[in-house]
Image (tube, rainbow, N blue to C red; front, side, top):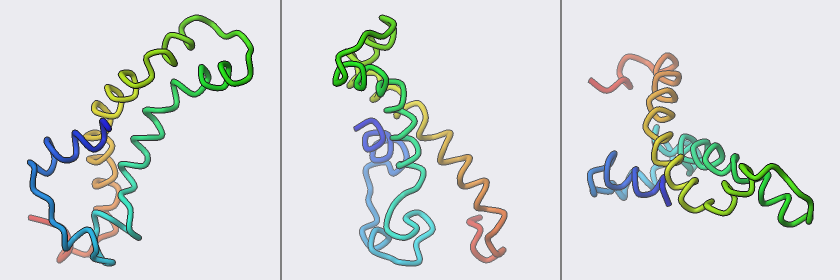
Length: 106
């Protein structure tokens, strides 16, 4: 949810380019998905995974992990919202070097 909120309200300014969503040559959605969003989601969920595993397996962990798991919705929402912009910028910087000069936006 954090990724979608930041993407829609802060990055896209509440405007979706529907044609780009279905364009196979889109630089934003390579192969039909947004890699920065997937990476952000995985990193936002990661701190809550130990608490989930401990809860399902019935063993004890340090209270900090169980507290993170107990507040997983808010923890993941805040982490995703805070990580998406830096990850998008880093990924665009990394992929910018392999683009031809005509593909780089001015």
